[in-house]
Image 1 (cartoon, helix red, strand yellow):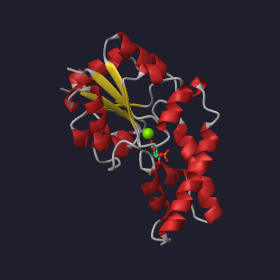
Image 2 (tube, rainbow, N blue to C red):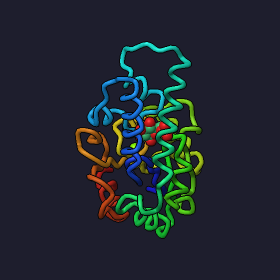
Image 3 (cartoon, rainbow, N blue to C red):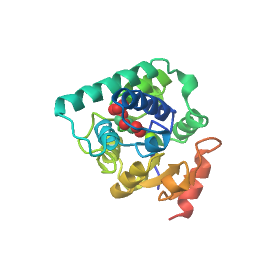
Length: 217
Ligand code: BG6
Ligand code: MG
């Protein structure tokens, strides 16, 4: 029995994945570090610090320089998200959240971002959500299941009754490790380990998802 959906935020409900890319790209260019859109794909769903470590590769920096780079990247990101409004919701996202609410099911956010609250407010989503778990909620980042388990606890539901909707390989692994049902958005080489895969939420309705997940039982 499915009673709730836990949505990742960046790259699922809105395309902030692009702003994370531009902010990392600016930092990498300033530091003379190679960083491409292809490299950025590996950062989806990965915490801020782990992302920087992947960009730095085996280069060693003192901790205070690492902290300064993390703060600089976040400053650039905050500049980018200042302009976000409900127009930046990805197609199908608001409709699906409204269908979930109308059907008496619950919705939550499970985002690794410490900026998730601000993005949710700018998108005008807060009133459609029953719980928000974000980059401040748990210590262990995805692919550990902790963030989604935190969301399920807030919803008062066992993982098996919650569907995680994710665009990142690390997010699908986190959900599977926690015993959640899974929907992956994006190419199969990225989210193919999910039970149900779709290119995006465009044209995806609650009934389709419930039917596809039920077939998989
Ligand atoms: C995830 C993004 O949602 O949040 C990652 O997919 C990002 O790209 C992570 O690094 C942490 O976000 P923030 O806003 O705390 O730096
Ligand atoms: Mg994401």
